[in-house]
Length: 258
Image (cartoon, rainbow, N blue to C red; front, side, top):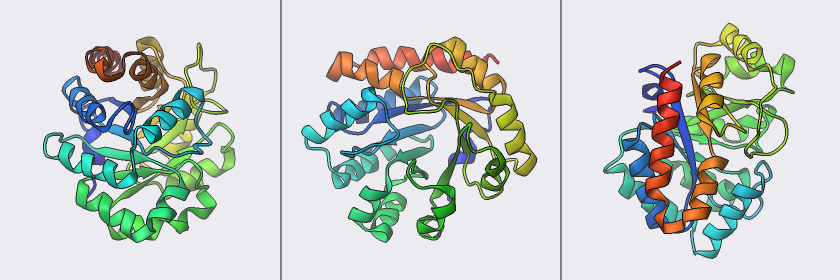
């Protein structure tokens, strides 16, 4: 049974992202624990992959560092199993279709279930092809998170009708990364989603400041932040936990204050 609805029960959610295994799995474990303690409502963990097409340079480089440090899918699952004994908030993997197929679809979902992963975000799986994974996810109680983008337009209603867990609302065109301003009309996208479903809608891509997070949370159910955190991990490495913890606390306060 997915824990994802819990993330949105107490007002607006703050959802941080971290690349698994960057700079080490031990650091990722400490970061996840610290982020929950700092107020994160749901945590996304990136499964390192050599060709993460939706990612900008910050997260691409984190993937490369994690792979170079020896992070594998099996090792990441082992770390999640350990962290699950401490952390109660929902945990979601962000991955691509290739690592799932390489690992074996059913085996991958079974390990997600066993280790306590609640959902999957797969940026290179189009809505029209979601049946590639949806039945396998459903069989193991894993929510396959749907993404909507500014270009989704007339598809938004259809995507939202079939959504599980929460709807990931992509705020900007292009790849992930910090942006100085977000110009997309998020409110219109979210109102379309809400015509079709009461599943929560969280906004990601480009958010880095408490002001941006508050602005996005004001028109949705939560804010997702990745690159800004991954940048901190790149800067401080094994010593990144206090900086990330302070950042998550500030972001959660900004979102909760909406």
